[in-house]
Length: 243
Image (cartoon, rainbow, N blue to C red; front, top):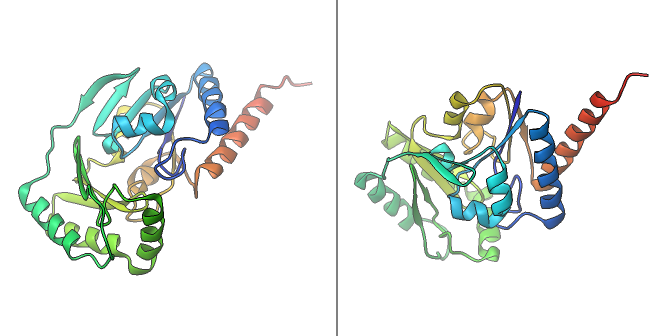
């Protein structure tokens, strides 16, 4: 049995946007085909339930074999909550995060700089309420200035039990060490194949991608679509009768 594990934002969808309709239709067909073959399909995202449903739609969210939210710190199956972490952000960590946000070299911020989720926290110097243009501008600026990498390094250096990693285009995910996406692998039987767009060292997909049986480090959702089409074609060939 194969467990197909998918990051959502940037892997199945454009950044912070819903799935493209044609791909959404194909993905629903693809996941049902895999399930009928005895394989399983899971979502493994740093986002919460509402953001995930907003991006992939409720039908896909409920059809997959499970949706691991908040870096695996919360699991929903068939729309029902199965478990969740009770970790909350310590006050001293929040104080340091606020100081780092205040010291940002980025010119201008939006609201929602610290978003507390189940079992983790997401911080952003620009603010999660930024416009699409601000998001794109910050992403390009951060590539040169490495602000998020620097902030993550500061937090990791000062809190030995905490892990901070780069997530998405504008933010940093923070959780207790070991409570990243890779924690879900111990709950699954079979070969785990992971798809993600932040599989580089320091990215929030790195640990799970390195621990999985196989990984696909994709540039965007279009590359995911192309890989799934190849997997589908291989399955068709394997099912063809020998002549």
